Image: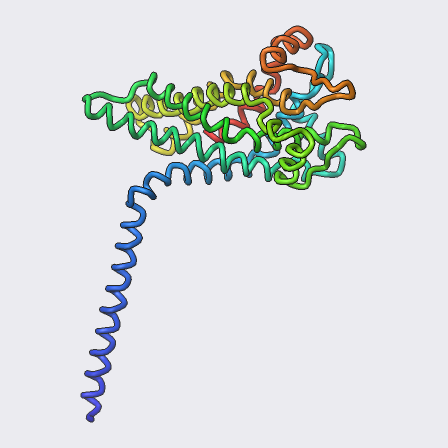
Length: 318
């Protein structure tokens, strides 16, 4: 065979190989595209995106959440007790030589987001999608009332599912406030959940569920409804870039979410932290009793202590 024939054969083989590889790549892209656009995956994506975004945000703001909890638990039962600030709590934790204590309960925080945020953002996005289709068919835009209802529904349903992880988070973050002999020294969220279930019963995993649900509904009302509304208004009435609209809407939504939900978050923290004393009783009988006792013993403004810290904790999630 001549050298020319060999070259022709080589070029033909190379051309066929390229065609096969190109066809395989096209098929792979088509399969991936079909998979991403399948009804099941499209329905699951809001939940997946919600969970991942919540877990990333928690990884960033976990120290802020730790400080927020310590502020809420300070001076319990007294109007003239200590008045800690975010800086003083941070200094106290770091001065003990354990800066990583700021990340106490991270495993519980991540589990909480994997369950709670996955559910609430997924449910909210699904509800909003259905509302958008209905509104379009009726020739109108989705209204604020519908956004608010979707936010309240998503928050309430997700909170019930995520309460055990939320409880474990509070127990882990408050454990360091107890005398050394009384500390549980939870190793992880699994250790905390199993310990609570073993020592207090499975039902105890839903301690503080009522304020948790109300807090979640208030949070979602402020966060999701106001974010969606603020972004719609900014898009319609300003010339800000898409990124600037998102950040501005987040700042606005974070404020309203903090304002509406902080009192319930405060009560939730107090209820989930409490355990039976030597007399077999707990400080608070429930959400209403906690509200009443705190208002009477510590003053109504105690519910908004640490608002700035709470806002910084909420805004990234928005």
